[in-house]
Length: 358
Ligand SMILES: Nc1ncnc2c1ncn2[C@@H]1O[C@H](COP(=O)(O)OP(=O)(O)O)[C@@H](O)[C@H]1O
Ligand SMILES: [Mg+2]
Image (cartoon, rainbow, N blue to C red; front, side, top):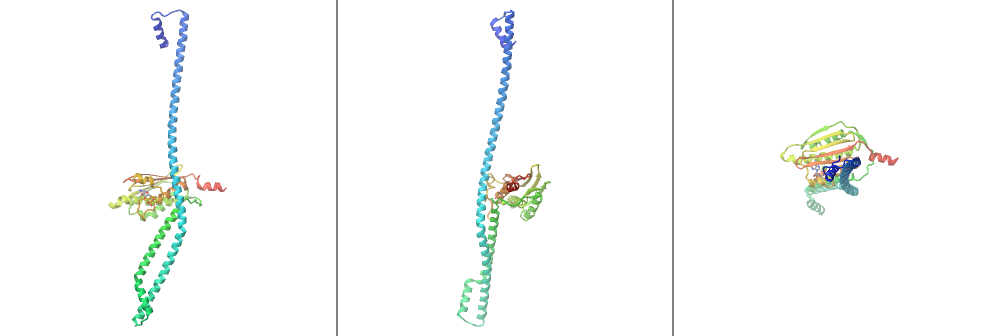
């Protein structure tokens, strides 16, 4: 019998409950009803429990989705900003390119003209000295002598040579920077090629050997990779930037004591992507620097050593041209690890161009 019914009977009839048949069958009915009520109650409780667990989970999922959306929005805004600055830089580079060429041509021409004029000056001076030695006097001769003395023809020729050389070197550097800036925002017309990323890395190491050798030991762990549809030249530039940055960072940490750091390059292939890790045990970066390294023109290096464009360009090459990712982790005084993924499926630029051309 249900314990509630039992208690009620006891309270009502104490020691002498009625014993007639109709009352007994009535009791059985009530007992059944109590039991049914219990079952319903339990069921209801279970389903409320289930529903609230589901609600809780859904709520958690929504919170997670919201967080992901906010993060994505932030990334999008950041990459929009980078793209806008990049396009601006590309536009400016394009504008600067032509006048730089004028100036370059003019400096070249001035250099040749100055050399010719100096030679004329020296010939004139020799003539002056020769005639004077023979005792010939004339007002024109005196003028040549005075002008030669004022100009200082001797020093002038060596000073001018140095100045012209410096101007040419400066122009060379400017046009290098301008060329690099033009990379931004320019839609790539070329087709992707199948390339071996390991080969690409080894080639880059050859090019950077002189820069790296005196600061770091390079360790390579190159896994077996499939050929990747990509822009190998552009990726070479990305590897170059990352390796040179790593060399600078280990140089900064170890150079003062005269030791060598380590740059470790690892490649692996997953089902979806080729993954390249370039890690160094160099100076690392603090939070403020970490937040800004992908900004165009952000650099912590001195003039002539850094342009602040390397990572901005690298990011644009990896993310925009190859639909890949470029991320990093860094600890001050311990080192930095850049992780690059390049998706194997080529559902991006090149196939889009084909699709829209068809
Ligand atoms: N491996 C690294 N270790 C420490 N700092 C780095 C590393 N790579 C990049 N950085 C920081 O990021 C900045 C921007 O890098 P980058 O865009 O290549 O420009 P640049 O090398 O011309 O300064 C660097 O000036 C440096 O402060
Ligand atoms: Mg750099």
